[in-house]
Amino acid sequence: MTSLAFLQVLGIEPKMLQGGDIVVRSPIDGAEFARVRADSPAEIDGKIAKARAAFLEWRRVPAPRRGELIRLFGEDLRKYKAALGELVTIENGKILEEGKGEVQEMIDICDFAVGLSRQLYGLTIASERPGHRMMETWHPLGVTGVITAFNFPVAVWAWNFALAIVCGNPVVWKPSEKTPLTALACQRIFEQTAHRFGAVPAHLSQVVLGKREAGMKIVDDSRVPLVSATGSSRMGHEVGPRVAARFGRALLELGGNNGMIVAPTADLDLAVRAITFSAVGTAGQRCTTLRRLIVHDTIYDRLLPRLKKVFDSVKVGNPLESGTLVGPLIDGAAFERMQSALARARVDGGAVSGGQRQLENVHPHAHYVRPAIVEMPQQTAIVREETFAPILYTMKYRELADAVRLHNDVPQGLASCIFTGDVREAETFVSTEGSDCGIVNVNIGPSGAEIGGAFGGEKETGGGRESGSDAWKAYMRRATNTINYSRELPLAQGISFDVGA
Ligand code: UN1
Image (cartoon, rainbow, N blue to C red; front, top):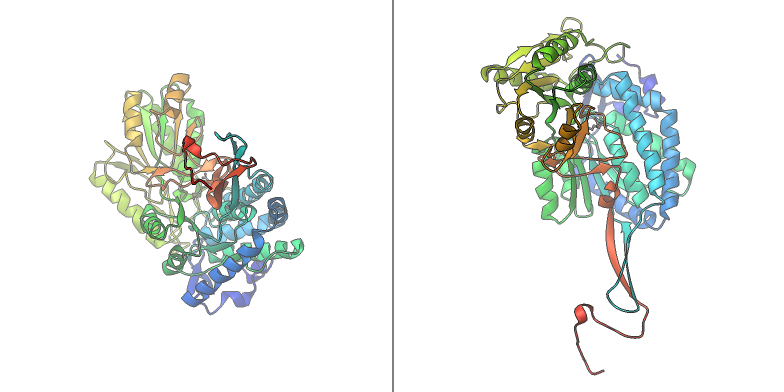
């Protein structure tokens, strides 16, 4: 389907793609297009040791200088945006526009991290003792393990990588076994950047290829003080306790079951566009994908026919072709999970429109689907689960308080939104009594967040925050310093402790 020459632009040589034990298929046609070799446990061990050695050097480099490396990396990503975006599309199946958007997200976080490298501020604190000063200093934490999912194969790594590097930490990256080539390409690009920069310690950035066990080697290794993991809540249930058992820090970015409330005063034109992008974009395979639509009963019959029409007409097909809005699902297992979710929804009384397989004649080994709308009589167990596919469950409400209750009554807590022209409703939704999610929006869909905000969510979403705002603090350790510049030794809390010396 794709020529190896294309990959050489990104520094991936044909010999790197042969003879390995991990089969890489493009979801575009389901055909095998490379084989890469998994790292052995001993190799992973060696990589972590090398990262530890790199840490001892890198932590001594001043943070703004570390920022300069990321500035150069951002420059190189700009050069490779088209090629890397295309590789994302080939390996993951998202449309080219979104593949390039993902690389743009990498560039954006690099820019953010460059500024951040001069702003790793600590507080100064008023001491209760005369002649004393208190302050906080932030220090590099150590080797950062990054485990990423297939659905954002490069952007989520970049959020972690750019911040970890400016914070003084080497990174060991275990990408999804479904998308190893984008990881190898990023590593190649970074190696070029490092060469241009000059004095970068060897092994500041490394990739570990493999399946679940490879990730778990990183999870269990106490030389890795921070493990940032993106994936399902099931995966997080395993990673979180294992990292905690060795007193490591886990930054978890897990499942979402994102909802939108559409109120009577909503601008329906905007709502239809936002719903479509966030429910069918990326073939429903974002952690921020819109999965539940809670519509006021007075506008339900106006909104639903419009949505069904759009869902029925969006172009499903080859993500490399312009005009396509919905590419394939990642694989056959994803298709099976979608079909079984639809079957369960039917049993629960759901009325399903769409959801059928598409283009089977052209691509018998790929899994394209028509996005589905499922009108549910209530929020049953299947609606409360995250199914990584373009299924939008719709429900009705009468009172806003009921809509908010329904909205929050799921195990996940990532992204949420309300469409309304009523400031009271909008403010209620973003208030403490409103959405319980980490991302709460008004008149904009739940997906497609900018990098400047902290990204993450509550409950089974894992509680982690990545990307913007003060997410950098997870990558550093905080020291509280008290400096005595007096000739006395007063004790805090006024304690008297006379040793008579
Ligand atoms: C993900 O799906 O894991 O907000 C990340 C968004 C993107 C990131 C999604 N900026 O939809």
